[in-house]
Image (cartoon, rainbow, N blue to C red; front, side, top):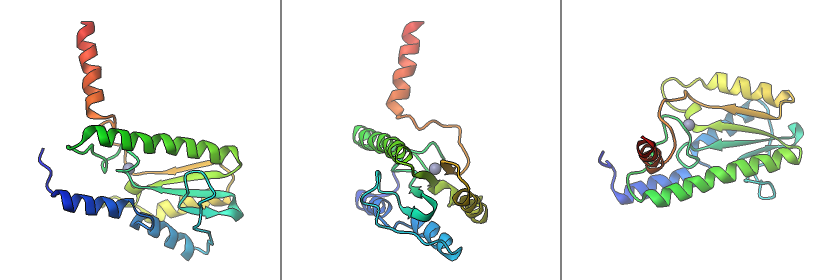
Length: 172
Ligand SMILES: [Zn+2]
């Protein structure tokens, strides 16, 4: 498959996706704000720097971009170029996500994750996402996750899949 965007466009897209205040975050913030929730945005003192912190509810929310966090969903695809770089980068992000979540849970925070794929595309159901999020905030479940549809393909790096296939062949 050929990359349809050139290098400059791609890095512009990616820096847009990577930055704080990316669109999915803003969307969740504004939906919650309209429902009367007040939160703090400065989370530098918290593991993983959650996007939204609601001290009153002892809850934090991450709004994860599916590319950067290597989500097994329709929005994630391994880039064709620099496979090792991306495997390290995204692998590290995933690892950090797990560590941050565990650290937050261990220190008594409740941790919600809203994936970008729940907020994008024709099938999205923002009212449903918000409703479930609000119910979670008012409840006491330690964790919450909202995502788009699961897709068949795996988010494992392509060469890892190849390696697995190769070793299977070797066994035969
Ligand atoms: Zn996703």
